[in-house]
Length: 134
Image (tube, rainbow, N blue to C red; front, top):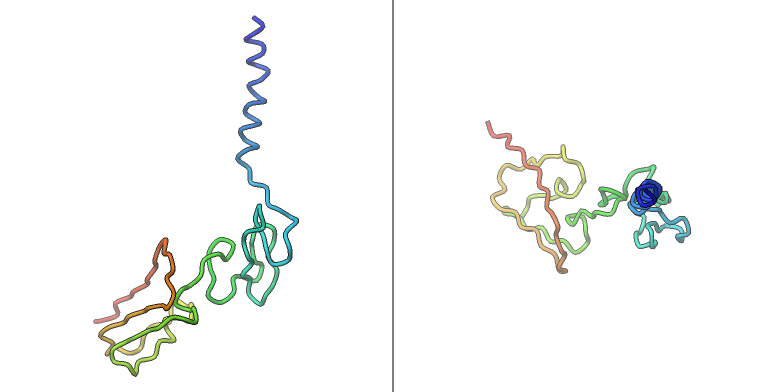
């Protein structure tokens, strides 16, 4: 009888412990421009504005940054990117303007190669292609 009473008493306590261990508590003691439980993430807010303790930017992400807490970088906007196209006189601004609705107006491009002088680990790649050929 005593053991079943003890089980009933401790059951809610165990549930409370499990729930509280799953909740991430953001750190509020980070230096300006940093956030995270160990202040390990740098803010990348537009116009150099501060992010909140969860990394959210009221003004949106800075150019070239996107995603949760603005922690993902658009590798096409990095200074060491080299874009090679055939024909070579084609412009590449449509690749790096951050606007998915900007199109390549040159239908003569036959090849496109993007390379960097530094190696970057990729966890995913997104390309938006729209075939407007009629």
